[in-house]
Image 1 (cartoon, rainbow, N blue to C red):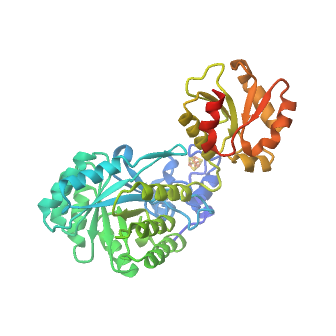
Image 2 (image 1 turned 30 degrees about the vertical axis):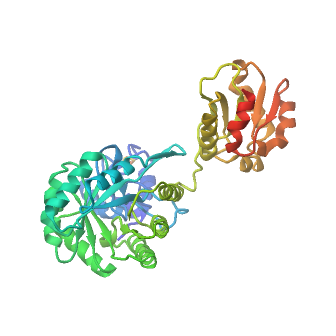
Image 3 (image 1 turned 135 degrees about the vertical axis):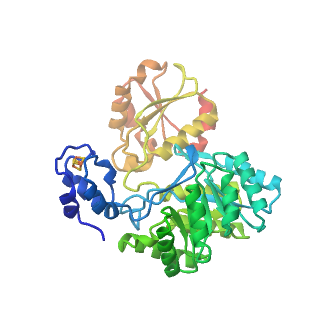
Length: 446
Ligand code: SF4
């Protein structure tokens, strides 16, 4: 049962020592009640209070880390139903399936595609996060071979081993010590043996059941067997059923504090029709899956899913922005053109990317617009002639350039005269409206 902030406060040391990063114990208690802080942050909390608060202050979805090292994937920890309430915490991982019946070349090609899937978008690294190795042969030796092959080709890639055979799982996980995989395949009939194998290897147990009631009963049973880290599969496979079950799980864990479903959800989106697969995976990313399994790595699909995922897991209350400063792109000298734009991350990365493509060294003045794009910032009065002039003057860039020329985005061409008035001796040049026209434009300036 969730405790109120005041109830939690009564159990804290009440010394207001601030070691938890909050000004008072009451402020910390309020954050704990909203599940926006962890009890671990208070070093002085008593054991008795820990016992009482532990359950109440734990996030509704158990935090679990799949894999180890720099590509480990964090899951769970979600505290809200809708991202406008508070940001979603851990982005849905995307895993691609290989089968132990696939040829060695085919498995190697998938691992290579996963390793090659990483892109940099708005300063974040996005990639296919994991590989699921399915026991399609029913032959433990084949499963072990496939797991060893994937691990050898991509040692850092987190793995999901999919089998209902605990002995085969045991042998396969022996091949990847310390990798903390998911062992997916525990069900009503093999729960004991799978739990034992997961415990032995400190693996995360993937638990499936044909419906939510059965799933809830099964996770309680497995927890009683000593396995704490689970991912759950309510058995739904059609898009409609996934949406329904994932929503029930999220609601039950958050609104009703049902601990038996408070685990990251794994969803299976594989379809023969890859366009349909992308749509189903999009649904899973949008609605509460922590891992979605797809059948293949294709650039078009990855880009669509990465972009959607990044948008859903961006904090809607905090615009993505970069630091206000003059960025040197390429080997600039005194003759390098000076351009200006706003500090919305997407704007910055698109503009700087196109400047890099042009191979023309440029000084890019990025002005603080509170994370708004050019037109929005202009409309909101944050990218005005006065503010631009003040920024340019205070930046000191004037001393580094041979010609006092400033290139402004085409969308705010209307500002050119006013900027020249505010910056005596400067010439304002109107650049293109769209960033993709920058390479051609900059070559004319070279
Ligand atoms: Fe209170 Fe503990 Fe925070 Fe200190 S660290 S202010 S005792 S909650």
